[in-house]
Image (cartoon, rainbow, N blue to C red):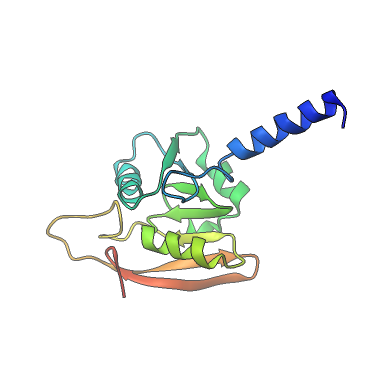
Length: 157
């Protein structure tokens, strides 16, 4: 291998290793990139939830969240207020950290997980004095959608 091709190879490998898809936090979990609106308080609450669960998040506030959702293949009916990327998966909305850990452990063939809408009591959507909603975490991908888990608040049922 010539010096030039070796340099090109090493530069490419270094860039690949530094990309979010391959970066890992000190907890051994992949780095999560969270795309959110800068003025959304519930999105910030969800980022706090995943941080408390050991995920390292890089928060990005893009001008066009719809384009990111389209690029990642998030179906319109599953869209919510923020979209994250981790370990080759899309995470849409207020998905509990425990469901994301399970997704990363099981590695199903899928595009990602979603919690459509903004269920009361889901991570980042806690409302003191209000009962928590029951909601589904949906696994979605090219073969369709199915319930991955069911929660009430942050508690899996």
